Length: 326
Image (cartoon, rainbow, N blue to C red):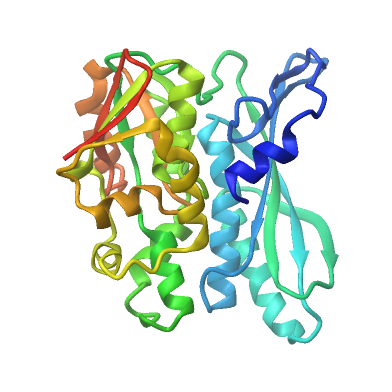
């Protein structure tokens, strides 16, 4: 949903007053954290969306990886999940079985089971998961806490919104988008496992609000500024090519309309690249603010573990503003 519209919907709703809600929706974080009477802390998230690719199995896998990402972004371990299925009856049950198989296989890769769910007949398909996890007390990563001097590490390239829109419009082939599909299907578990060994002061994952949108939320929650180096931000090669055509999804235009007020964009940054920074992502990487002195070591460990696209894309600064430089 357009972030400006969401602001209007949420405006005036009562604030959460339960003292056991440690992380609610007020800070626009990735998931909620709730303290049980035992002292354990559960993490819960829900995410679902319309198809971003043609293959039903890949769609289910991507949707599941995207849902699980919120748990990894909070430094939690998933326990189990529930399906959310809005499936038009006009299509065959074999197709929807493939969607569920893709989601189930991805959940199994994460080491959890999908134990149930809910289905409705809908005019447009939608699929995703409710994921429940556990986080160690005192070890939660949220989007608040970034400190001046922290390095900003991003673990996946950006551009999936542009690429999947091109696929829907038959501007590119399935073979051409294979790199992006592979990335969207990749769990953020390995990245989280590696980052757990370093001083992570804030973390989020890059999804519908785009890189600048989610980075802005971290900036505002932490009351700091960010300096992003556009040339260092990893991009899918296809996205770089497609950006010149400007056929971005509607969510990208909504993101730019809402978050551009928070950004000082250097004139040296190409216009096509600037749009990619607002591009609405699906199952993107983690964005972590890591102690600056540990940045290079963390980056090397990520790449050694197979997170090969990981990059140092900027720094946390003191003034409460985002600057995008070349």
